[in-house]
Length: 268
Image 1 (tube, helix red, strand yellow):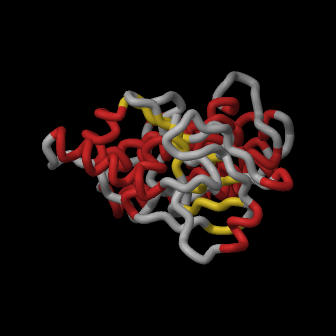
Image 2 (cartoon, one colour):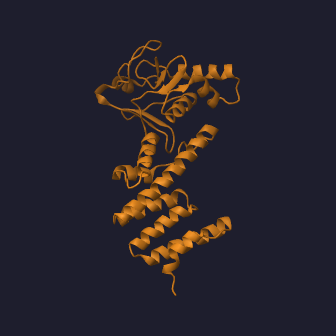
Image 3 (cartoon, rainbow, N blue to C red):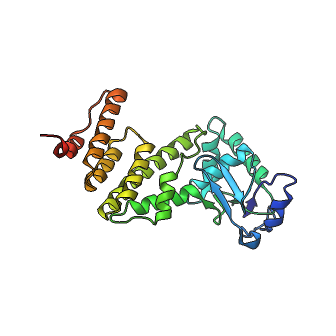
């Protein structure tokens, strides 16, 4: 199994904190960082790979390989990676480009990509922000389950997945994460409101609304939080804001479910 990582020349500080993890081309060791320092990969709000807090600069081809593998929890076939990243190239040329990208990632200091003759995977000790966010979101969608407060905060503040990348595989994963996050935020807000934690519920619902202002279910959750807290004026104001927005942007009216929610609040 090979271990690959590209370190920019002259980065002596990084070399001093990253321990050798095996010789490229042989059955390598695990990812080992001196002093217990960590390697972290952030894909939300953009690509950012750091070892012990120091940014690791990778060529774009390497970033694409690392990001693709980070979005898969299991080892991925080399041919699938090559075909997904170089769609317009014949199979042989795509495989050659993948080999070049992996070669440019190689360094003995640490392992980013683990490789066999047939499969590739991200080194298991690398922490990936989107994986953590997905796990927190899935926990939130279990009935009656609210993640810990730090996880809720991370979900509220989570940015877009690789926002400046427009390849098909990125767009699919970006939309998958966007929908999962919004569903989780709505579920968390409803659970928090049910527990009487109205401030946290409103903040979480507002994060869902900010994530997609035209998403009616997010507005319904926020309105429900206001109603549960007895803030009828805020509930009606939020309803009118959403109604005016969808009329202007989509030429539509709020759903019957929305109308039913606010009907008891209207003056008789």
